[in-house]
Image (cartoon, rainbow, N blue to C red; front, side, top):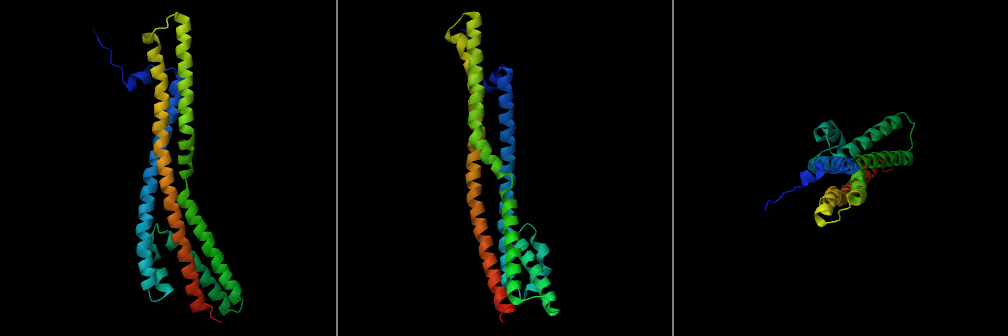
Length: 227
């Protein structure tokens, strides 16, 4: 007896046009999700490394000017970017204060606003595109289910047209339809895992940035706004 072997690729090739469209959407979703996961992983690894190097330089430096002069060495560091914003605002206040145009209290508030704005910008940049992972995680199975339901409808229509309702007649059409659900899950599961992983990493980075902002402000208040 001859056994007909049918693999997943055969099922995709013999699927209807609507199911093929669903599969194409899911495959594109999956590819883009993996691209986001890999790039974000590399980005966070670089951020963590550069932040560690920057903090070491920051606490060992004799003054803020020397840290600022070496700021370009820490490209990709969120803390370095926040420091740069605060330092530049501090420099503006120092210039204004020398000309008698700025008050002490207002100066601290200006620096705090500059640091907060820079911190929010860095966090937003880190989180960019990860919302797409949440979208794929939540919609992927339903898109696949739509393709499955449509494929099963087409299979039953073929049964009605041919008048044959044997398992040999029904099974290929249902198998073609179920492949959509499988690919939907294959796209959604990595996206969900990746999204949850990055949310935890973002919270950790956000805490690190906020701690640095607090330390930087305290350092400025002790050394530049003691009066």
